[in-house]
Length: 446
Length: 173
Image (cartoon, rainbow over all chains, first blue to last red; front, side, top):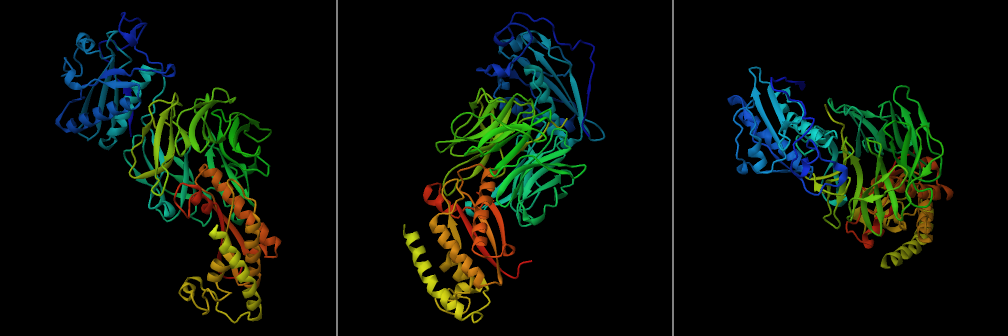
């Protein structure tokens, strides 16, 4: 539906290999922003509204420009220079850029673009990114083609390109978030499985509120969602196809045993989950092709919240075998676990970063909840948030941002989805239509 | 405090009424729970004065036990309540029970599901140890999803850390 190809212009669109001695961010080479360095000052960018190549593209050009700017601003890494400060105007997509005019307003990056509506109704979106102080394009110009109603995805694609070229990390804007939409009073909550774009747009409800539903998880392709539902009368893991909204129990579990806390393996061929029997909860894996279920832990304690390493070789999970909730890692086929959480308090809901470098978790200590990250050996623990109730981290596909649930206390306490980056900066509430919890971040869609 | 005094009163009352129930087995209504509330003040069949009624079970025997933070062990008070529940269930074999385990909101969602299951199982095991056929009992965990009290203080939390024995009419499958 959405296609992308490079478009070649007569002028070279290659990255300048050397740059002029420039300003702040661009001193030692091409425009580059190191996310891990703990950026203090957001990088200023100019984004003149994309040019509408024909009348049919007027609205789309304005909307796409707005969404690209919002994506970039929302990272906390970029600052938009207001258009009324611009000296130059971009009147045609192919025109020469007057770098001096953009340098004068201290724009480090300049994003230009054009939108055309074809006779068949398809939108064509082109963009270019310039390193203003190096006076050179940053990467090649790109063109995206898609249906008119996919304009948001095309905007996110442009923003992902800009983010990626400047930070060296892959983007996370062309993604979706599955979550639980909540309504009603605290003692009679109604919950529905829902899905939306990462920025809260395009909300779609996937279940009605007749059955309690909890904690969705995406498949590696993003096409399926695992979640827990009380639909059958007791908690059970279900598998839903996002496109068709068809659902089925993951496995016919006899005897009313509760299954919950599912997660796919990176290959998508295995699901790990918790199964409760006579009050004891352990972790099992299910091979989706063969239907073979294997018990991975065998203790009288609670073992839950399993999450695979990106290579699929290991599973991080929580257990209260030591007396309180702590985080452990075991081989993917079971075997001796090693405890990695070492601090005071309780540690739960570990989730392995898609990059493999960190494990995100929920920490509970002295009546407060925190979202944190630690290395896979338990070192470098860093708490990113603190509140009455923060829980359930989920990673952006680039492993740089985390979403989670934050719930306020009291009779009218309500959950909302928040995001924070792994340095603990840029804490933001994610727009949702009403109360929301249990976010699950999809992989990049393209 | 008042709550526990009430409990003791209920248990004392129960001993008398159970003896009564034993003599008059079958003489009372079939325990249609919803209808029973209207007769709560009187001694009509299905009302609170009817020892074979679910209302009686809920209000006089006590349909729930409470737990300490992060615990699933049964306090002496809980054991008393459950002993009475077991007697009632043995005296009223036409009922089955679904034991709901719950947690307060001070915990992660998944852990609380597992904790609620532990609590429900502790109740089930106790009832079975008192002679209730296992086949008449089922368990379910609601974790922290169904709080009874909604304040964010221990006064509410202590009521939410519970296991509730919910009766339903009909023979066990």
